[in-house]
Amino acid sequence: MNERISVLEKIREGRHAFRQSEQRVGEYILTHPREVINLPITELAEAIGVSEATIVRTCKKIGFRGFHELKISLASENVQPLQTVHEQIQEGDNMESIIKKVFAANIQAMNSTLNVLPVRDLNRAVDALSDARQIHFYGVGGSGSIAQDAAHKFMKTGKPVAAYSDTHMQVMAASLLEKGDVVVGISHSGSSRDIIEALELAREKGATTIGLTHYAKSPIDKVLDIKLCTASNETFYRTESTSSRIAQLSIIDALFIGVSLRNPQKAIENIQSTREAITSKRF
Image 1 (cartoon, one colour):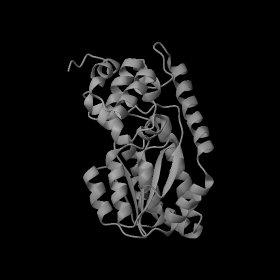
Image 2: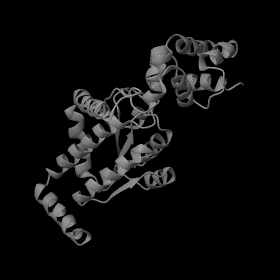
Image 3: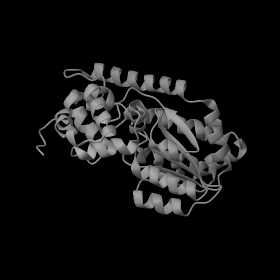
Image 4: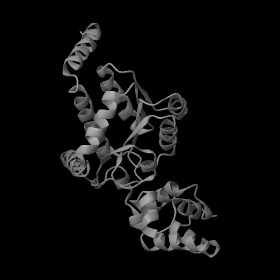
């Protein structure tokens, strides 16, 4: 198939081979292309009234490996290229304008996250982390650095903590977990197959699973015991969700403080010990 053919043209040309449910998927994409770009697969499936598998099957029938690849192509045809760098940036913006827009987007993401993040879920997460035998953080790509930052903080709790960004290491580590362990999976889209598979395995082994993800319904929801939501205006086809990462880091800070306050004396001692350990590393 000619790769220069647009996504919508591929759907029009290929829909004669669609099943009835696939026809509904194709029609929805044809009439709501920009909306589809910003929807996770779970919400799109609910909006159309089909299964996630039907959406994936439809995407494959017109030459894509899955829904995410279709969204990338659809976005390239419907969104200005600069928006893949940042939602609000325009060609010709000077540095003063750029920094104001970046800061404004981050502030909005923080405020929006406060509005969608129930305190009861934060309390449940703090309970689980406080009682945990050991804690794992899983993230891939940009989320891998978030996982590393989380492990760096939670090391100061004195609990065994590890961060894994390699997908093989994630499932290997998950396979050795048991009841009393906690895994925090980080995925802005909530559609990362590797993170979902690792969390599913950890849950089967008896570990408590916590997800740090967007508030919209997505595949990761099915493998979570506790969902900690973020919210931002960033779209789901973006590879780097910068504003949401600021919100994720803030949630991790709040969780660490919440766990530390369960045993403040121990937290103070641990922080002091780690500071003393790195004293010789500084001038």
